[in-house]
Amino acid sequence: MNLESHLVNGPLLPLWICEQTAAWEEALARDGAAARSGACASFQGIIRADAVGEDTVEAIEYSAYAPLAERLFNEMERSVANRHNLHAVRIWHSVGLVRAGQCSMLVVVRAGHRAEAFDGLRAAVEAVKAGAPVWKRELLSGGGTRWVEGTFAQQIF
Amino acid sequence: MNLESHLVNGPLLPLWICEQTAAWEEALARDGAAARSGACASFQGIIRADAVGEDTVEAIEYSAYAPLAERLFNEMERSVANRHNLHAVRIWHSVGLVRAGQCSMLVVVRAGHRAEAFDGLRAAVEAVKAGAPVWKRELLSGGGTRWVEGTFAQQIF
Amino acid sequence: MPSPMPVTVLFFGSLSDVAGTDRLELPSPGDLHALQSGLEARFPALQQTPYRITVNLEFTHGNTGLAPGDEVALLPPYAGG
Amino acid sequence: MPSPMPVTVLFFGSLSDVAGTDRLELPSPGDLHALQSGLEARFPALQQTPYRITVNLEFTHGNTGLAPGDEVALLPPYAGG
Image (cartoon, rainbow over all chains, first blue to last red; front, top):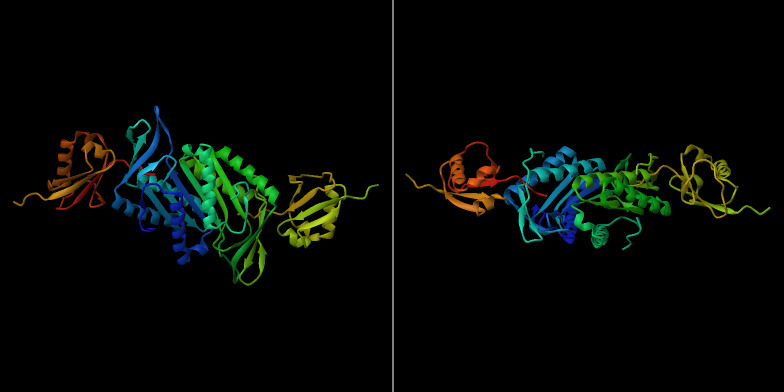
């Protein structure tokens, strides 16, 4: 269990998500944040078996500029927490191979009330989508691969 | 594991949430919904140790009109899923005693894309808040109890 | 004349404090309005509390007849979540 | 004159296909613009792809000097999540 790292090799499996989330919440409970939190919201990004012409997406291979990603994920967490009055926010993202149906991204937030949690969760997910130095290549059922076209959004976190 | 019932005796404990969510997702995978879902979002309502005068809230005792609640939770799930284009939505709510820091409500949604998941999650939570025949009484550190004033919102689901 | 048949009345939330119980078996007064009048005479604080009514799990608006074995529930404003 | 010192160039996403590798060690041309000119001459498709640049994990805009051991990264549009 490594609470420091945001990047995880391979899919974020259900048991891992449970353990990681529990460890994170225990750490929060120790610093007293738990008593003030009335809302916890989470988001999982999951690989869709989308059709691509005659093929379907079987998996996605993620790559990241790891040291830069770690720093930017930390900055996103701080910025979204401040802006949305969150008690805590935590981002995890896969690198390497993740198959269709598996989870490649997890964001969890805690806040005093539900409105802050909803807004903060959405903001954190959009920040990852727009600002994380991560790239992906689809592995197709026909054996081919395809880079997924990305975006250079304005920095939104 | 009872996937049929929305009401759960006592708090929704972390391990129970993991097992229940996993069972629910397995059931979805069997009917093929998993391949189309790119986003899974969840909300946990947690008891805050709020100050009440000189006291703090130590626990909440929930009661529900169980057969009506079960029917209305089913209706909320169907209605929110249709309106927000969700592949699935599931509500669980505690009855009985839940202590500060514990979870008393869980909503999980799956959708093709994140925008639907965010909007649907929020709509489902608001539907529970406004439309579930559930009542709660705070148990205070000084030994007293206090009914939490409720609302008769317009039916929003 | 047959004797009145019992109906079940359920009190939820703070109304269980008003009634001092969460459940009463009462001889049916024939219809809902008569039942409400009887309850409000017995528990005057009921008149100060807004509540919805279901009969056999269906919300009712206005009066309705009550049959033996009917379950009437008094639901104060909800406070779930 | 000292001989040029090496810098590391990292290619991410589709740029690793353009360069045929995700990492090159190159003798430093002295500054970033010279490095870019060299890379674009060697891999013309670089000119068709928008990318951001970091030097030692800091985003750069415009030219900057390169020192021995610097790490230059070429980042095409992000596609996380």
